[in-house]
Image 1 (cartoon, rainbow, N blue to C red):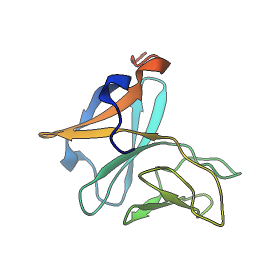
Image 2: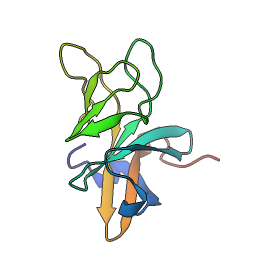
Image 3: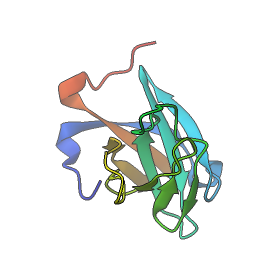
Amino acid sequence: MSNPNAEEYTFYLVGKPEDFSERLGRVVRLGEVELAVFKTTDGKIYALENQSPGPRGGTIAEGIISGDVLFDPICDWKIGLADGLVHAPDTGQVRVYPVQVLEDEVRIGLPKREGGTLHD
C-alpha cells in the first residue's frame, strides 16, 4: 500500500526487520486479523491478509516470493505484494495493510474505521 494516510490507521509493533526471513512468509496476528508478512531480498516488508483469493481458499503465508510477487501456495496464482492484485489470466485481490519501518521497528497499520484496537 503506497503512502497510506497515517491518520487513518493505528500502527502496531510486530518486530524488527531481522525478525522476518527474506522470501518467506510469517504469520502475524493483530487482534482478530491474521496477516502474512513478507520481506523481499531488497528489504521491503509487505503485509497482506493471510487468505488466498483462489476458489479453494486457504492461507498465503506459506507462499514464496520472487521480486515483489507472491506465488500462492494453493492455486499457484501470482499476487502483487504492493497492491494484492492477482495477475492475469486469474483475477482477485488480497487485502494489503500499510507497513512502517522506523528505526529498528516494523509496524503494521489497521484501519481506525474498523476499530483500530486489538482485542485479546
